[in-house]
Length: 351
Image (cartoon, rainbow, N blue to C red; front, top):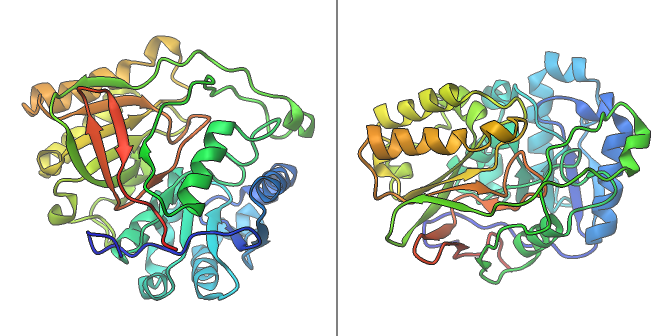
């Protein structure tokens, strides 16, 4: 258990078993070769065994019609003593429909690693409310199935986060280039074709001068919007002194959409409780719009709310950008604007 009272799951070791789960869209049934590529590359890279939850490979139509099956799979994976970690196959847009079918006591009583991103934000907040540290990171079809093999930056981040109990410390930005290039998953031949990389600009420190620390809390902007007012939405005390991390989906929402979302955080008193904000590099917005999100965040936080001293870091390597790093919920992190450093001050797992 860490200083905040959050329970850390046991670390992974070579030979452990990981359950692949479909909590939202049934993508493995639509592009089975993509899922199998992710499963293979994951097993080969980390020396782990992957099994599927009972309905993980069910048709997308069946999973859409029966959210209770997805919820049952989640509880099955956490209660299964042979499973050491649970990782999402892919995101989607309706994990919110499993909320009423999940018993969070099952998560609380069976602490183990859960990882995913995008619409997996829903399950992360369920874990958070259960007091369990989870990891915002790659999924099997988006991340581990990277065309032509895993990015080294992502692979190192996953290993450090899931396999090591040492403090991660300074999290350097990816220096090998980034991509949001689209290669159609429907064509299996694309799987061996590496995606072209764009030049890295590095983290952007928009404002703030003082070093701040706080627990990590956040997720995908669009999924978070669906969760406001639900049973898993953090209360004001849980937001207090948090470092909010936000990233947008592959749909590339407009600058005005992000402004409206942030204004809600301000109106509900959340922004005023935060220690700092970090933003993932947006995908599919085009080069000319790449920095529009930066302008939106700084305008709402620094100008409209008068929080010009709050550190804001953007263009970071998490969420719908590749390669991506891992961010553990509830653990202590630090933003140092003077030295332009972001650090994670606690491990995500225990020995």
